[in-house]
Length: 441
Image 1: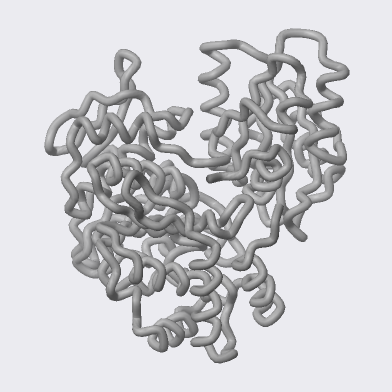
Image 2: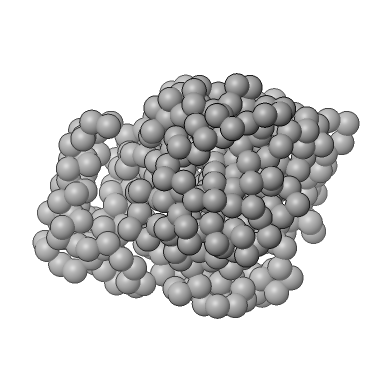
């Protein structure tokens, strides 16, 4: 991939400010004050936290607003292949990834304003989000939390149009706490007194209690999935229901039953933020929302060409036990409709519960090929990852690359064309998209 000007700016920042987590809002607040506090002059902000489903909620929210004719900025993290993916600027006909020259200039300007003070690269890049979103006209801004919520660099937004908390489960325990109620409290840190809150589907009653109690304490008008709004499948359609009534909609373009709840949270969030969404706009949004590396079907590319003939290939960057469960459920749905042997090609990093992730696929996956994660220093060695898969009750073997796994499978396969899930890490998923020649656009 060609090195872009913005990439060079970020590489330089990495040498000055080593990558790492240092949870505090002091540094970014100081920097933003030097920049004129652009975070206080944004269009209405939909601020999204949660362990899983943040990106899908952002994708549906963007699709809903754009289908209704609004200009929308979107900030997401992490990126898959290119740093530019984090910044989608509003444009007629749909938002576009930030232009490289604009991005590079903004990075340089923010770095200069920092005056060499201690700061993290993520904080600088979050400040870039705020100046880009302030300086380019839009009617809404969707901002995804990076890590946790309370001390995330995006949490300098003082009056969001709505704060959204998607499903909370165990992840990033070293930074957020080793119990789900502690993690929920960190996510709830994005709630602001008196500002609307949407609570997405929660598997943990403990997490739900923490979220509701926090919203009540802050006098936040709150709607909760399963209590005030919900979505379900009926006659091959998705039905969304809230106090305003029912909407009969197409099934979401994003595969998996879990996407019903994600889409529902987005509809609730957009409405809570004060936007009117017509039935026609909601229909269009369900069929147009896209989110790379989340149950993304790969149909062409360099890696796809190496797979067994007729193979069905899915890519998903989900990387924790909660994500494993919803991915496995989505693949089980596929199995019911169109039975195929399931093969996993997996790469993970060492901060994740690998055995917990693999456990979701017990009884569903026939075999696992484990692969090193080249884009992260924290990648689990392929032989060690194979042991974790074996501990989860799966048949597994290490290979050196995704290409090797697909070629080995192709050369040894004798039976119905398989269904292949490539995933286990967003770093890994990004490397796969890059190697396949199909980066996000």
